[in-house]
Length: 305
Image 1 (cartoon, rainbow, N blue to C red):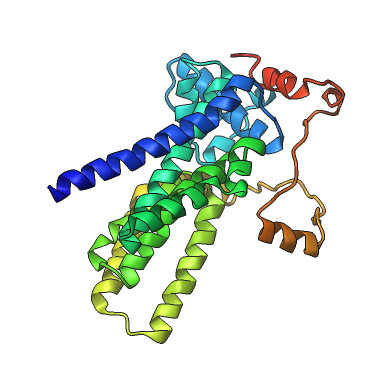
Image 2 (tube, rainbow, N blue to C red):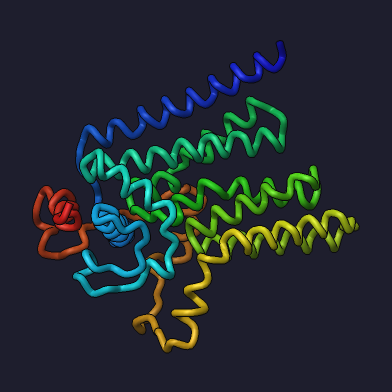
């Protein structure tokens, strides 16, 4: 009887999350416009290249031959592309704008679900987990990443961060036999956004050092941590192979630009406390004076669709 109630409770929560995601994204689909800025144009152009190749029967994409001005750039070798494939597949059914909003909504739903069950595993409280999921998934910064600025690598990575820290908690303090959660979270993070992997790894190292400096770390927990690292490298290693074969030793350099802050330090601190960010813009100056410039530029990106 208790198991039946648990299944019904879990099913109801998932249904609420699904309905919330659908309602939230349906308003954007109805507007049928998309704000294009530098980050979104980059990732959507990559999705377009994958879509064009899939149309021609090519499953894997290594260089850009249809997009990026047909220059053959190889950013696909150095940026994770796994989670762009669902977006490209959606394009076979829906128009470009509807496809991107459905894709964003899919990850909003996944973020809600993963955040909820990560907190539930940690706290054993349905109420606390439900509130945490809503706050974690619907904070302005997360929506800014997915809807306004199109930072899709970070947006997707945001979905799996709770798994990383839940897994680390179990390895160091909780149920040591759940070490695979850490491997799953880090692997999915590798498939999403490399910078997030670096940041998460750094924080995991800090927490590990705090553990070993304040408490004794049993050998079993250390072994499980090493097993988690090994499985992560095994599953995500193919993402890093191009760095060894096509980047290191190839004299590839980024354009030299002067680094500067767009905001003052006070703005950065206040923005962090208020959980707000700056606005977007049309990428091409000659389109800025058009009242419908976002839609015009979107059509320019997807002109081959």
